[in-house]
Length: 182
Image: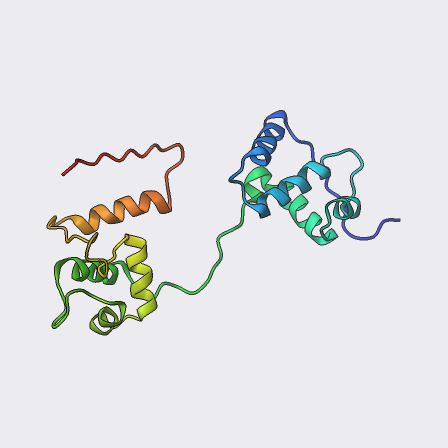
């Protein structure tokens, strides 16, 4: 008599098997996903038990059971990490837009450029929040050699669109960048 929940058998289609092999060969696949894919391949073998797969791959039986069940319920999409809850955003889009506009359009009093400290005091945000926003938008007001203020009134919207493409690219998208020489 076996202990624990009944083992779900996994039958991989040729398409799923091919996709798993492709992801395993790809250099950019994350380590966590590779581990999950190896668990699924091992579980698909005839007679594979959670304990046997766990020993073979050096993981716990509970880990094998978790990913076997997720794959059985959601197939390949079940192997991707679910979004984490976390705290809600405390800085809204309007505040980010004001900070970017202020960085680009104004200079601080008695200074040549903004620092995270002076911008934080001016906007009421923390220094780390200012730093994260500047990093996300690629702003570096402290580097006078490379930083140029844009006179484009729609600059913030354009930067948000471009940054959005990098942070959350649409499926099967191709992004081309064309820049004119000075």
